[in-house]
Length: 275
Figure 1 (cartoon, rainbow, N blue to C red):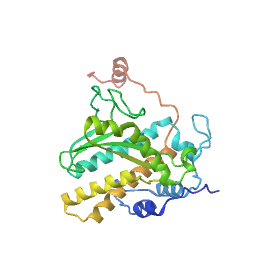
Figure 2: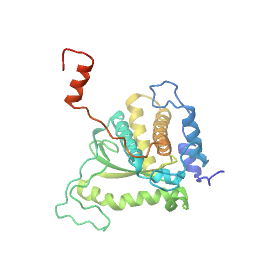
Figure 3: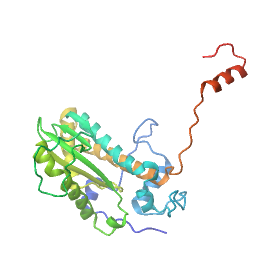
Figure 4: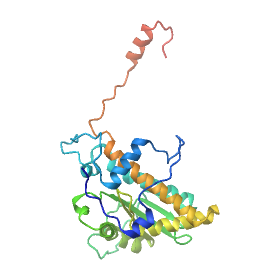
């Protein structure tokens, strides 16, 4: 049986395509894939039910595709977010941005009043990535990431553009005013779905990174943006497949050998020196 396919708009399809197609066959390459992985990618993309996945999740609920992408067990939800964050920080480094920081702490409020009640006013507030020189030399840009489950009930009934815009607006209501008024910097929410579709703000940001990287390396813009898109697509889809196939059960108990165990081992083997 086939699940309802999540509809993609023509604009986003033209921008990011139907998923990564070019692969390298080196075992050390970030783009190398196996046959089982390619089958899982097609299943996620086109809504097929996946074979070889347990019917029941360790949390006790039915292990559907929607639940597998949302279940907090195993840490795969955080892995999707963190890998996209780290990849973007590396791309900023490659593009020549300065002062690239992961999880930068925001300046504390010193009497400033923010208009929106949803704004984050905590003194220990952090964002995901900051970098200087993205839009202009010396200016700082803050990024905050969200990889949302496209099949969740709150998103599945919305057109993809509206779902992306909704999550971008949520990020802006929390951080945009504080970054503009207190940090005197710019804020860009990087929002994408588990199917690999990116929001408008993220698209503009990665296009600018492509311009900087093309100027630095001497490559054409078309070659550079293709390189960035492929890395982004593989990052999102590989972590999505890991959410479906990854281990979510109880962690194994680690056994730590003490000195007595080591001494007995050496004595048993008739060794004369005990280290």
